[in-house]
Image (tube, rainbow, N blue to C red; front, side, top):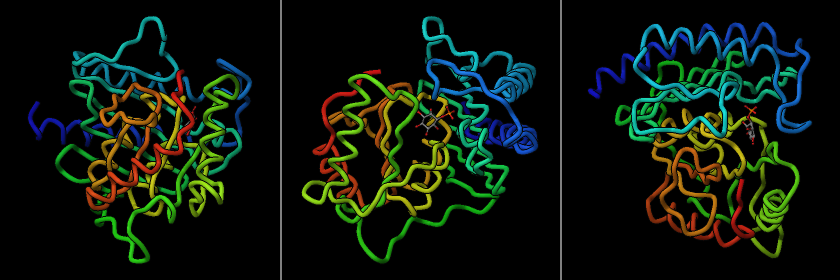
Length: 286
Ligand code: LIP
C-alpha cells in the first residue's frame, strides 16, 4: 500500500476518533457497567455503541479491510491475518471512563502483514490527538513530536520511571508472576527503579513513553487493541517494542505481553531491555 494511502487512512481515522471522543466525553462518569470475563473486566453500553459506530463507518469507507474490535472479539473466531486490518479499542481505560478519571481514549490502529502502520489515539478530556504513519513521524495535535531527550540521565533501569499495570487478570500464575516482577523492579536490593506509574490505560502509558516522560511500559494480559495504535506512535518517536517475556526480541501485536521502551541510543535501549528482563519472574501465559 502506498504511503499516500496510509496518510489518507490516518486522516479518516483522526476524524472518526474525534467524533467518537465527543460521545466518550459526554458520557464519562455517567454510565453503569457490566462484567466481562471477571468483576474487574468492565464494559458499558458506550464501549459497544462507539465500537459499532466506528465499525459501521469503516465498513462503508474501507469495505475490503478486516476489523478487530474489543467488544466484538471472539477468542475462538477472531484472528489477526496478514491483510489490512483495523484494530479498535472503543474506550481504552474503561474503568477510568466509569470513574470519570480523565485517562480514557479512543484507540484505532491499522496493521498490514500483522505490523502496526497507522495509529490514532484521542483523549477528549485532555484534548490530546496523537497520530502516526509508519515512516512519517508521530504527531500530537498536528505538531510533530520533538525528539525524546532527557538531560538528567541516559536510559538505564536503575534511574527509570516505568508504567506497570495490575491489569484485569487478577488471579492465577500469570498474576503471581506479574506481581513478583513488579516487586523485583521496585525492590531496593534488586531493580530499585525510581518509580512506577499506573494510568489504567495502555494508550496513556504509551503516550508518556512516546514523549519520554516515562522510560518504559511493561504489561501482560492486555490485547492488540490496547497497544496497536500506541505501538506505531511510539516507534515513530524512536521507541522500541520487544516481548515482556525474556529473550524474545521479536514480538507480535497480539502476543499479550510487551515491553515498550522510549527513544534513546540503540545501545542504551538494548542494555535496558536486558536489565529489565533480568527482573521478570518467568513466562507469563494468558
Ligand atoms: C485496559 C488497558 C490497561 C491494561 C488492562 C486493560 P480497557 O484496557 O488499557 O492498561 O493494563 O489490561 O486491557 O479494558 O480499559 O480497554
